[in-house]
Image (cartoon, rainbow, N blue to C red):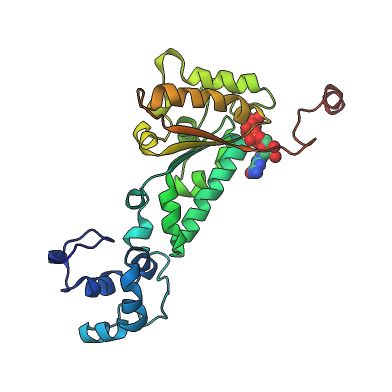
Length: 277
Ligand SMILES: Nc1nc2c(ncn2[C@@H]2O[C@H](COP(=O)(O)OP(=O)(O)OP(=O)(O)O)[C@@H](O)[C@H]2O)c(=O)[nH]1
Ligand SMILES: [Mg+2]
């Protein structure tokens, strides 16, 4: 019996062609990196030696006669490159960027992922497997508004950000915590007060997606109020309210910290504050 296609999950009965080789050429000829990633053993035979022979027998060359390895059109990524759920490759990290530094770093990861996918790079597949899900959290709405995540990926308005990404909704002015770590902790705790759970009710990360990941990585700074003060509270709540309890081996939560440069990141001294006041 002929195997089904591991790229588009269709059965031979759904194909216009008879063999898997012909199907790959006809249906996925414009997504050669996907074919190479999934059918590496057949790729050379199809696209480097035998493509013309098979294609000539069956009609026009679906790859458009481009040189081997041509990634195809940027807006037609093929089912593998477009797949955003990581299912085919397993799910590893759930990344949460907290505060300005964390937001920017996770944002850069997402931009890189999308650039690779748009260019049909083989590495896009690895990236998708590495990323089970993601979210950005902050107390500063202006920092969130500048991100690729807000502007392009989610197309969030300010209102959308308030519910999906703000820590301490309704509890402060959304302009950050400065060097007051205790305030960062307090506003994060306020989100979970009286039985509330923003992971369940508000933030754009579902608890199930977080549980499905192999591990959760929190990306944040340790010098200012949000990254330093809110992150431990969020980590604790993740453990208590989101992750499955009673496992023999708990799902790991890792903290990925921006190491501060000496002298640059410490709070301004009292004298400096007086000078600028
Ligand atoms: N590597 C890297 N470091 C950054 C970036 N943005 C800020 N930082 C560093 O992060 C530290 C400041 O912490 P932030 O994350 O900006 O502060 P925050 O957590 O948003 O806290 P508040 O603004 O006080 O609410 C400093 O050490 C910065 O150098 C970034 O995009 N990349
Ligand atoms: Mg900030």
